[in-house]
Length: 201
Image (tube, rainbow, N blue to C red):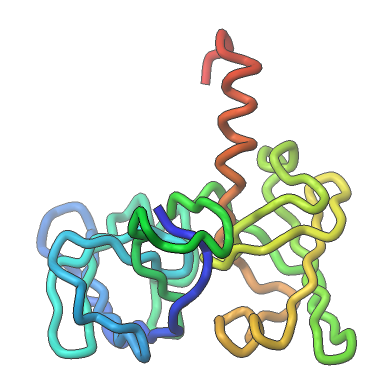
């Protein structure tokens, strides 16, 4: 589990195909300012909101394997570039964002990224099937960042990004047409299941 509070912006520096017959790739990630002293093989690190397992570590770099399924269902992992990083929560950690599983539910498209003073108004269109889970003043994860929605209209929602978020994450580099990983609030998911326990999914 994660909180959606980004600890550092890292960099995917290399993508190496794995000879496993399944088109799996191994990513080399420069962790930047992320402290790796307590990271071991088998630990989880969220990269742009995707929970990945550390398979090796060398200095300030760590390595993760990404399956073809994950590459198909997410964005930001198929090419070198910056990634939002967060280590898995400890039970005693402060929950500054909201509970995040690291399992991407869909890919959204940025419609607007407008300056409002020092802030930015971010408007995203989510996949239609996710719209019912997104509520005004509710929580949503965008590229691993825990955010609060300002308004919702159908499958479109808006978020206000403050200067700290713009500086401490990759979201400052968004523009209209950018694609982002979305994870809906766990509470919304479980509420729907409880209310529709007999429905086939």
